Amino acid sequence: MTLELGKYASEVLSAYGVSLALLVGLSGWSWRRYRRVKAEMERVERGRDG
Amino acid sequence: MKALLLRDLRLAVRAGGGFGLSLAFFLIVTVLVPFAVGPEADTLSRIGPGVLWVGALLATLLSLDRQFALDHEDGALPLIATSPLPLEAVALAKAVAHWLTTGLPLTLAAAPLGILLNLEGASFPWLVLTLALGTPALSVIGTFGAALTVGIKRGGLLLSLLVLPLYVPTLIFGAEAARRGAMGLEVATPLLMLAGITLGALALLPFAAGAVLRINLR
Amino acid sequence: MSIWEYANPKKFIATTAPVIPWAFGGAILCIVVGLIWGFFLTPDADRFGSTVKIIYLHVPSAMIAINGWIMMLVASLIWLIRRHHVSALAAKAAAPVGMVMTLIALWTGAVWGQPMWGTWWAWDPRLTSFLILFLFYLGYVALWEAIPDPDQAADLTSVLCLVGSVFALLSRYAVYFWNQGLHQGATLSMDSEQHIADVFWVPLVVCIAGFILLFVALVLMRTGTEIRLRRLRALERQAQRAAA
Picture 1 (cartoon, each protein chain N blue to C red):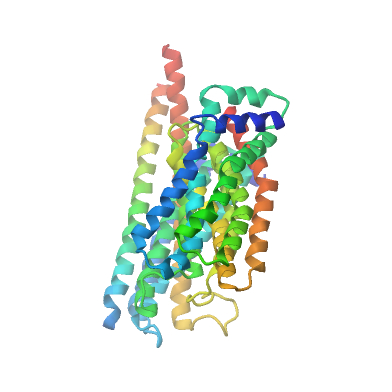
Picture 2: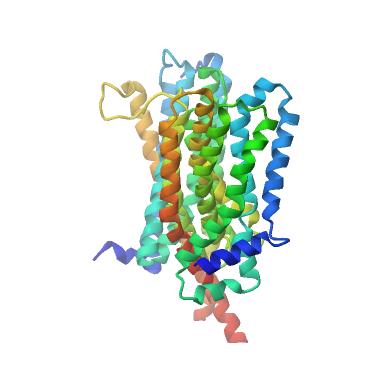
């Protein structure tokens, strides 16, 4: 698996780097928020029942 | 509707109504451009139509948030809404009043300001014609934006953010027709498109503006 | 049994909660496989050199950016006509995802354009349309943030989405009229004579599938979050009223 990016290495790598960072950031943010709100919801529901 | 129109016109012309503000803004923007790009007559006459279009657009934008905000603050808007006049007609009257107090003066002022930018003789009629055709669309679109943001405190910046993308097609066709006219190229297509946008916006957007006013007054 | 049953927030959450990890996992799998395949295992194209590898990010993100807006338009229409809260919240949930996708498409396009066209940015119709699309996303998200009452916000943003769609379409035609472009034609076409060679095509399809799954997973996740947040706020108000 040799990789020869030639003279365009910086372009290709920066495209991948920035895009992946944005994707991971968006996914991580959405996922963390999803988990947090879900936990909060469960806590409140338990409090109402108990 | 006529009464509302006349009332808005009177309010705008009265001191503090902001009638002269957008004209003054237009003048200042036009004066600033040569400072920024340099005084060469060739450059100025080439970018002149576009600069005047952008200037007129920004001057229109400046006066938009007063449209409903003042009536909203002093409580006149709910009163107007309870009158037998449908809100769609209110929006249309507001847009017409706005055009008469900003769009029309801007169109007329564009010609003398063109002299400052070294416009060639052939450019003037096209510039005035495209502005006359295009500024009604700017007013109607802006009225929709103002109706959308009427309930929001300090919504002026948001209003610009929402309205500016909506201005893109009008600006492109308007400035393009003015540019082509100045260079003696074919202008029928952009002119027709510009007129089409204006008529379409006039016909449809008051309904959208009326709908969002109703939501905002709920 | 009809599709409108999923408009019930409880039912929506119960149905989508088990789907989310699968869609999310599938998205990660597809994107990782597709990108590794594309990045390490495909040859360079004659004309593009190694920059052809950017296509595995550029095309899928551009597709999602446009289709995300269309999905928001449909969701807004459903909200305006049938008043299902889930629909309005789904539109709200999709906006930031679409915005990030537009940003990725713009960034990869600029980086790709630099060596190919010799400039980071050209006022090419396709690029310009995407910039305008980005502005529309920005305004839409800003309007959601600005209005405290959720139903009012849903109504106003829906109308903005409708009007914005018309003007976005108009802008597209205006921009094409205004400047003929450098950008090549559509990459994807069912006509195999036209579309790109199979070596690039297969990993690209894997990447597109990954991006679609990612969009679905993120929108479901964020919609669930919005539904729960609304419910939490309602419960809070109830508790306050009970205390008062």
